[in-house]
Image (cartoon, rainbow, N blue to C red):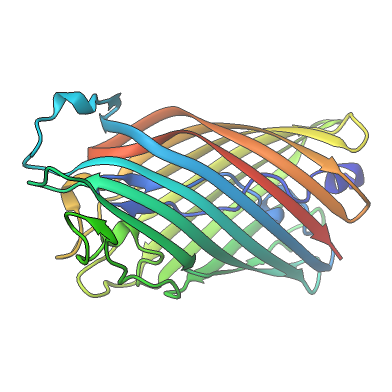
Length: 318
């Protein structure tokens, strides 16, 4: 177990709840680097992770199929999105005062370009938003057994991200950007989860986790849908200093609600396959890289989704 812990403390991006966007669906990487859920935070101490995610949402989809933009007459009676380019950075600080208890704070920063043809427009509208998103705070307890291989989580997503940015250019310049594309949702959400981890064989580790997200109310005419992330993964630790990984990541979310919501074009069920690799640079520093490809995408209404995503990160343990 010690060799496994040294090999993958930083694996796989954090448990994020994807941000729904108007006619865009569940946006964001769903990789998992929640150290407690994978068995890497059973000893007291601090851990710090810095992760960069890149993904380009440019595939227009309806239901489970892709849609050709050329099939839409312009102007159209509905919005036809072009692309949403995401460059995200997330800092994560994890602290375990004892083997049984721990807390994780996740601070995201977004850089997002968006282009769309709004309903009735013949010229596209563009926005460029950047800044801090909604901070997450998650506490955990895993003292149910001596092995500490099962735990529960509870916390909050805080309303720290701005949500009043406008379009900067095009036909909709000066008009409010869709609430699902803002840096924050404006709502405080309850987070509740559970996880388990163990060994399949002497050099094979595994984990599973589920995390539920429930908005506690609406904010200025907008309430995101309820969501759940479910993750399962395996890693091979037979190589010195080099650990390959493979995850399945499921994200399901309900429709938005409220006067500022795009009810008809929100909500999705997404399943991704995520291979990756972690390299131990020193005893306390690891670097990692992951790709994520969709296995199944089912969206409500007309939305855009990425064809793939890439995550790069550094992890320090103290």
